[in-house]
Length: 560
Image (cartoon, rainbow, N blue to C red; front, side):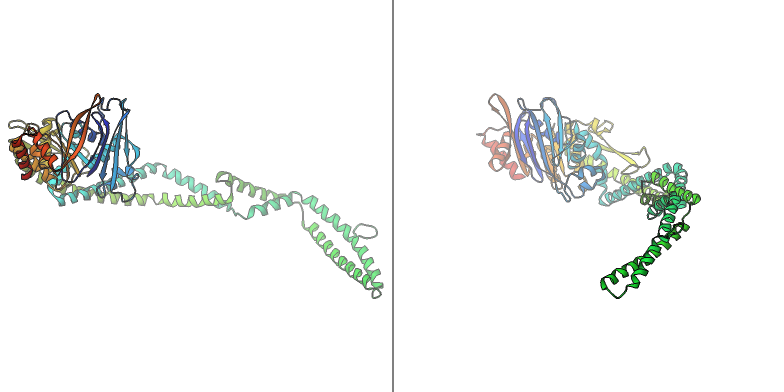
């Protein structure tokens, strides 16, 4: 429901704040006091177009803000998914705002963040319905017509409709999935060939993250094999004495060791040196043997070098294609295997999706048939009930016609048909669509009759403007009683000039026009006690000194 309505600089209204209540809220005031402006403020909150010159003269901008209770699960609706992100989880209150500049530009706000007029229509249209002389009510009524019939059909029918909507969404989801599969089917074989080729390339090379350093070392060794062999042979000759006159380092050490051995035991310090020379002699012998083996073992190997070069080139080629490292190459191989598995299983998954789609389409068809039968069964009773209700609302002889037209796509989001409500406001006239057949007052009374039937399946707040056009007396009282009864399930706002209606209100607001300086200003006041009596007396046409009018006002309020 609408908890608070704040208005600033909207034509006559400089600043107003209405704290609305549950049940029937009546808004009254003399002609020209600004009731139309207040109605327009609600239209702006629902995304309606701002009227030219609506900003109060001298003001830079006008501002309208509404604080609404959010019905449970409202933000779960798919159409509101983007807007729902603006609200904290479990939010039970929402603020809608609209700013209009003096130049006519408008901006919208939802939950304190910039939005569009379309956002206000989407969310505001689910929170508030406006019936009366204003253009926005046409859209509201059009969208509400199926809701009226389904609500009249009962809670079991509404539950069936929810099941159908779920099945319809699932059909859409599976159809989109299959369409994507079919779109991919044309490239499936090509993609398979590519993934298999790239995987075979990698598996043929079998890259190992640890091998590159070893391969690089082997390549350097083979590239310089001749020089390495010459260096090892020369060093061996220097140590072992081969081809050298007088022997090499090994012969010299052996001679030194022999001479020191002849003096062993006479001086401990020389004996220590002799031990070191003996150790060097052994070490030099070992090194000489290793150099001999190295020189004999190494040799130029063009074939081995070529193999290493080819191996490194293969690794380089894979790394250039797949990420710059052996690790990225191996990761790509895993991706290839996964994609191959997915693509090879696409045919099986497609068959499963087709079977699932067929099953849910059959379920949707069955639910749609039951839904259609329920609407057909409810149509005639609704027509009869509304005709009776309209007769009590000063539209004797008016009749409603429910038309069920097949949906152009076979199945729509809410069933196999579209619902159109047509009305003949007077006897002898053929029923025509609601938006074209009824005047503002007639339209409000038709929707009043419709809104009071069935469970409260519509929006929480209903606004009626021009509900009193062309009626009075007992009929006005009946209209007021209907509005009050409707207030048991909805919050109802009624802009009225009828004392019979206003006297039945749970909450009463009065708009009053005055002069501030050189400009007219409208103020809004919530009435209680004797102020209500005074306003009802004014609506009856009585002056303050008119005791009869005062008594009549008290009687109306007492009868409420």
